[in-house]
Length: 308
Ligand code: CP
Ligand code: NVA
Image (cartoon, rainbow, N blue to C red):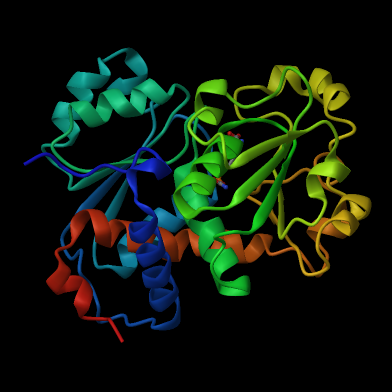
């Protein structure tokens, strides 16, 4: 039987994503150390790029569930010496029970998955960051309830996070306002998937107007460090600051996947202010990914152990 992968948020239906979010909320509340549904199982984690949250949350989640996580980097494995990704996938997936990859090219993850015997999870590519959206959506549901029908404003780069927000708008049924400078808009093929859920604005204040949630991300993502100065100029009108938050609804939340650059994409008073839920988002990486691991690796019988 073909394994079930999580490469994109579009791999989940709206019902599945809502169930996963509810499950993550339960797992967060009920910290039962006796519950070890992944006892003896191993998650291989391949990181071509740096990570704090993704690595710590997956490794901790596997430990909570009685399993083990294996950190693999191209620098120390044959992946970095040119062994074909298809061969690597065939070998690694004969030994471990699940694989998480953080890579540059999205095709590395899809190629790995096509050659894997076990579920593959996208831990960030240049194109998408679906695990972060599990946590962001859990955070919104916890603070404000279901996000269907709400308005989210994405201010800044049309990057991997923006793409996954477009997917979330489609799967969960909210409207996404996007304000991004010319030349940094999201991939039109991704926008074309959700035409009735996405609206573009030429400035941050208009995009933020009456929004329930404001989200942003760094101006230069991993791999774009050489463009930092150029991007600082292109994005200078796209900072989320008090004026932008004031255009949103009074109870609007602020989210950022982190790491953040205070004074660039977000002002310190916003990210450290009362409307910011960035550290809930970061914590929820753990709970949401535990729910994801259950979905991909456990049968219903094991999952029911903890249900209320
Ligand atoms: N948000 C996020 O993915 O963080 P890391 O790069 O630290 O994993
Ligand atoms: N867009 C950022 C997200 C980091 C979690 C990057 O790709 O570097």
